Length: 401
Image 1 (cartoon, helix red, strand yellow):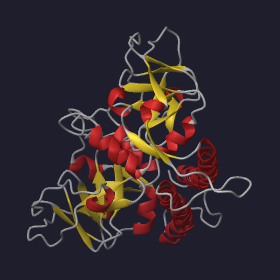
Image 2: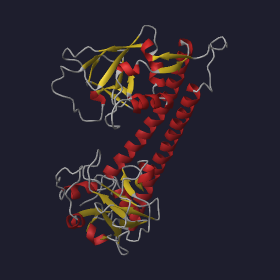
Image 3: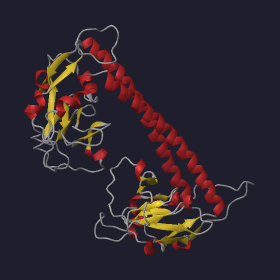
Image 4: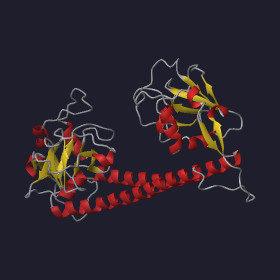
């Protein structure tokens, strides 16, 4: 008897089998008269969203008359793999009345007489249960941007297991949607804290907010300094056997082993650069995006990074904060060299000449302590968010088959 591991006790009947073709119809209507100007994309968490909001730009064609016209409540399958979604993902259009989608997507609408509810399907398509059926018809194509070779006929022929009554389906969907609301609320809390942090970062480095000494006295005015006064470049090469580190925009310098990204480093690391605890490292080609941080480990990094050594008494953690400010990133953008943004690089000799307003060491320490406390609060809320997501993930694994 096919039943899930977790089930509401009042339901006992065996689960039913349906192919997607039995419960849905393919949607092929075109946006022929440009009825909508909303270019859609699928985001793993947000679902079907406006490209302009999600990417900050449109990646769709200017003329979307050849795109599919998707209506609210209809589904779309993005048949390309990404982390956590090995056979792609299916999402329902909930945020807009209609939108336009590339014909690379497979779109479908639930039949009026389907024996499965739309809300139940939303949760089912978020679970790993549907992967097995789709995985059987998935064949990786010519690695065309991760596109999977799934034909519409094969996709709609896949068979899936569903709860046998709409009463049970509704109860499952309502229960899981409570966790969706918890996740949404917690995400809003994290977003609010991160927005507040950005505002405070700007206010402090525009000196609209100033700290005071422990005795209540005012700190001296900030003074302009070239970065070469505080840092020298380290050019030591790998000696062999050192731990591999990486520099990220979000988390600064991290151990490669702790990264969720695949290790693409060269097997021959003799040209890699040595990093010592307390050094700062920045991605020479991504400094304008804030890829920098203090290293809390000895190790090595790719030759694509620049290693800088703080002079004695220099608070490197202060500069780690400073280099994330809007004005600093603007400077790094202006002085990075290269024809296009994917070629821009900020060599140390240019970096060393850049000037920024810097407070005294005592105020620097207070700024660092303030942002450490704020970052700790944000991390606590992020950990809560991850915990809720893990509970939801476990439920999705055990409430569907």
